[in-house]
Length: 366
Image (cartoon, rainbow, N blue to C red; front, side, top):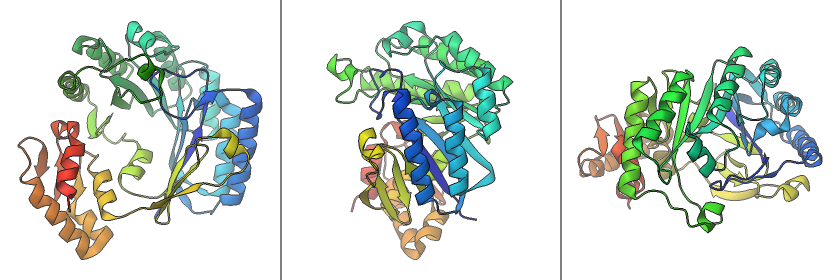
């Protein structure tokens, strides 16, 4: 049975981290109440009743909505769509403003996966990143979630920080692994235009140093049982993010909330990054067609398993097989150690992921 994913963008934060480029604004009770009412109206009007396999509440800082609002939103989504038994239902949270009672209320409402922003287990790095929690806060949040019954928890780590080192990174990895979480996302810092980091002239390390940290992270996480399954994501076997795999396998999903994107019935569309516009009822804007071979190949090549010839043929027929074989010929000419080929798939190595944009241009050139 084909199932879609649902994504809800919760744009509220208690302060903007200086590196963050996601759409968010300071949480206010009146705005959060209006957001919930608008979202419930939208779901009532947009619900298709079709089966849903994953639901993801991202942000922002979704836990600032509070357990009651999150539960109400999930309940409305379940009425508008057919959220399947066993669906993966994730909520992002920061290790502040949470406790066992909060997690118990989420579990009772049907949430079964948490994604929490640790970023680092080093106090000085947390201060640099503008984070409002300590490593101990993160450990206590994981403990509270476990006590409430959560058995699927992900933590975020950030690589390539100014002044970073392998020793600091090892400390963060060992800290996360000691908490025995099921999933770790590890992202290289990118200083985006318009952020406070950019205004302050903060720069990540040189490319070679950042690359060394990335490869060190891949190796260290594997030692602790976290296998790389996507450029920036690592999991214990069977604990990969099912929702994110919807994106990377080129499957369909619907996004709701300011800044949320969708790929549905062959079309891409998005809501503008404006809470005011969203509350006024403005409709999503078209973002062109989706689902073509090039897009499918680019998304699948983010995965460690890579792009499979059988999937290309299943999705695009003989044309997909021919396109794969052309890519395969080009991949064979790439520098050693960047691409893996076995006649059935094309996959990037960790070293290849570091130059994936260049590789994609080579493999998909006309």
